[in-house]
Image (cartoon, rainbow, N blue to C red; front, side):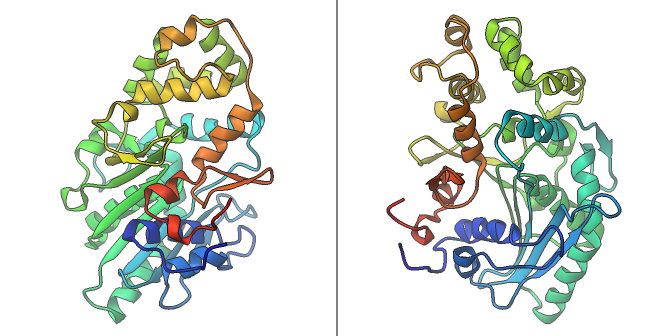
Length: 351
């Protein structure tokens, strides 16, 4: 095991802060510091947890941490992880992301995902109050806004809202495995002072493609009527039904892409390995346990029909995980986001 240390880069400290946000209890709202990640962020004091239920009496599924380290004030929005990476769990979770109509949310421009907007609203007042309190006691301190998974769109939407509504300008917005936060107009009109948003996305992670964008539909359409498309929709019927609605919603990706490849290197959007169609092919290959040398949808569709690979589904679940790499059956994580952010030095070795 490696010695627990402070994460060596700003992005790795922000990734660690995202892991810390998962230390907020969904029943009590209290913060229990995750061992290596709490140290890795190097909080100056215990960060403040803000949490809220989505419905009366429900679990505290919306949450964020606000605290200070050597970089400045960090706002880390917590994501939501399915109870397990089984087909039923994935379908329920993905459907929540896909089947959500965008809405107008002034002072933001364009339309934003209604589910993410309502989640943000449930904790925004508490987050804002804590940021303002820390700014009052630490004038001029930089503000960093981050989030993993569902926390990603809460971070990008929340940073825009803090600037447009409350005059708080984040120095940097960094997302990990973020679903798409809003439509093309929202992306086009995103406050220039907050750009570029840094968006980390990992090999085999499907979540950054949801809700589907125009590019997703263009890539998926050629295989929709093949065995591959039919098998996918047989496995995930609610998602495929939701696609028919989502096709007219014009969701778009926000941010300067930092794509973590299979080998752990980080490339930008211009690299062929980061191309959406190539990435989707790799995800489908893994889902159905097909030849990894295939690179196009045409190659995939020409393969003999097969069925879901449960080990492949586990790999896709592991790709979405933001923690250090882990290979045990009960704790399976690819570790790509920590690698891409430069956080490998804090992770246990020999796994």
